[in-house]
Image (cartoon, rainbow, N blue to C red):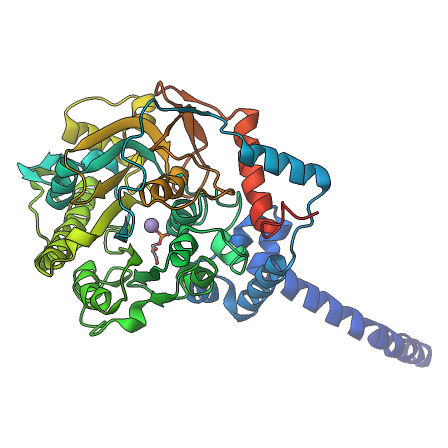
Length: 473
Ligand code: GP9
Ligand code: MN
């Protein structure tokens, strides 16, 4: 007994002393590994770490500590400027200097410099796809406003979205900067502070006011941090709009209120201006309240496709009111309006509904070529006759093309082509939340990436990560 007692006391005291720190380490390790971001990293799903919408969503997904961890990881990654080797610089500069995968047109589509000095209104229309343009449901036009713009303006019928995991924000990166998004994560969150060579900056150099408008939180997709790096002088977010609670719809401010109040903000801008408007209401899940629906979609009502039509029609309608107001104020003479879709909203799961509405079967290849493109429409009183272009193009081509139409100098880091003067051999789409990795040729054949496509993506990634340091010695 004594022995046992002595033995117990002999054994327990030092073991306790040894176990306590060990147990603390184990508990801390378990806690650390149970943090969602860390466990995802351990499970090989680490790239999800880089998917971040808002701080709020991180908070609900990962908890307070996980949220802090992610913020730190993102902050540290974006602080590291990638050092480029001499070979890498050469490779980048060679690719930028070449007009690979494009052939010159005999004549430009529009006279270069045609829009010089005009205001530019860029309208990024949430989830807008090309296949609804000019179409009807239950005997009514789905997009009457856009149809009028197409009838009198320039439109690209095979313009493809090239977003990856940054969704709407990737569209902004592609369209304004002619850069491809990073393969993983959100470029806006990972590299907010780099010196983006952007269309907005080029306009600014010509004396333009550069402004962005969106009816969502300024922090969403980190826009409030990125827009200054992209050359926007001012970002009007949801806090700059009035009666927000009364006009809340879907993810934020209704497009009705957004367009109505943006007219007033535009009036205050010194001219000429570039204004980027990002719409919001036609975001998935496309649920417009019954008393706000503006179209009776007949047989498609209460289906995914019907909801999509209602949403698109809603935003199209208020876009129409907005343009009417600008017209009444006499602003349209001096303003070029560009409307484009950010990414798809209708996916393969809804293909059978689309087939039923269309009254025909759609092959896999047709789905990719005909049902994944988004509109790119240009409207201006300078366009004397309509022009409908069927060449394949991508969001990456937008900035170089607009530069030509507005008489701005070329940007040497643009990875897209000036489709006013060139025709792409192909366009490639990226793997992401709304896209799959495919190449669509000018002959409309769908193929897989060739080494050149991977190389272009790699160059874009290196340009961003090195803060465009490719020209330094
Ligand atoms: C949010 C809006 C929609 O501000 O841009 O985001 P999405 O989910 O389409 O990227
Ligand atoms: Mn979007």
